[in-house]
Length: 568
Image (cartoon, rainbow, N blue to C red; front, side, top):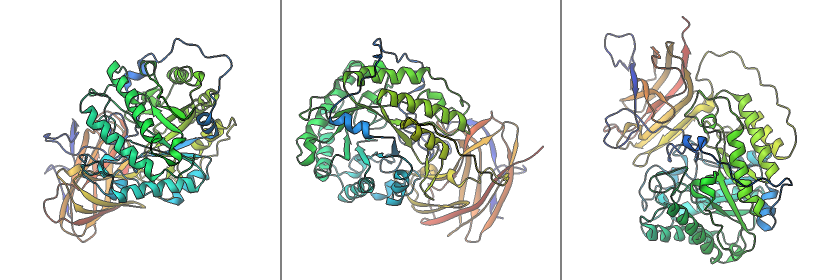
């Protein structure tokens, strides 16, 4: 009852497609698109914030300089602070979440949860602190919380300060930055296009942020910008003018903060390379800004290597080698640390592909290598494929991975805990950690994650069905295998809503689609489908709730979701 078959006269309620690209680009006539799990650089709005492209993995990162046989440790206030960091963690896809709003259009406080994570809390940060981490990078996007005169919304600034205070309260180091204002879809570019206007907006942000936090002590660090790109979104070999502009913007950042008064005159500041890249093509023309505070600058890079191993859009790549890790990290050492400039890896991480042993070995090698070089690392946690912590139930999601990295950062050996034996469960959707969501600019919704499903309260549905999504991510579907899907569903009004099995990465191709006719009465959906495309170990089941012309507002609820492999 209430189920709508797509193909009449067929046993399936789902249409089995050849891979249809569904990017949600304007003007395309396709089914859903932007996915709910965020993984950069392939989609600046959505992903794990990874700055190295596939091309970058094959690019030669080595420097012609050699590593000093005795590792040189940088000196001064910035170096001393970096040395005090054990391991860092990113509160990713939270205060940095943004959904395509134009600069000057305030998205309000709801943006914090738009990419599927719950609001940050003191208890959440306490969990991080209690498990060996002593530095938290809090990425912040500002353009979607400003007016046309570059004035930051007071409520948003208050919320940023509240989250900063969570970290400071735990006596940890905290980094705030200018995040998705840069990147593939950002307004701040390493380009002459609108450069003076962009510089004015960039300076206005740091003037206001500096004023708000002028009284904070050395535990608060400012990072000028995240992953800045030129107009062609080049990730490997930037043109010389792009690098010059990066140097100019870094200098503008330092000058603006230093002139703002209070403790900002001596605050440790972090400057990024072009695209936060760590290869020699990017670092060779980098110029450290002049600074009135001596030895108070840190250089940052983001290194996800080997790229195909770390990136979730390559679910079949589950093994790694150390060559590209060695090349990039050595380049950061000889380019900066060996010259007395401290370095942090502001983002690194590896997506979960059911390859725990390989991930732990990689993380151990990565952190040990950085530690030997005097470089400190910040894990990119986006709350989904790269998560270390379950922010909903306040538990550790990756006990052995986290323990391995903390021990490696301290020069200790970690003894892995035995995996807890769980009762056999043939339900492929039994892991509550794998629920996530997405609310695009132009839509408004509140997503509540249940033990076995999701509830979505829609107040504005937007222009596309993918503008609001509840998603179960990380399914492995095998070619030629049949699966049974079932769930209970209801809504506060009569409404028909689609769902899709699709790639959990760009281009978000759809494998199968179905729909259900929701009513106020709880109904049960059950059917089966066969995976006809190649095996994919990273599939998402997406319930789309956008683009409803009638019956809005409404609340839909899905519970008891089960996907079971049918034995032949």
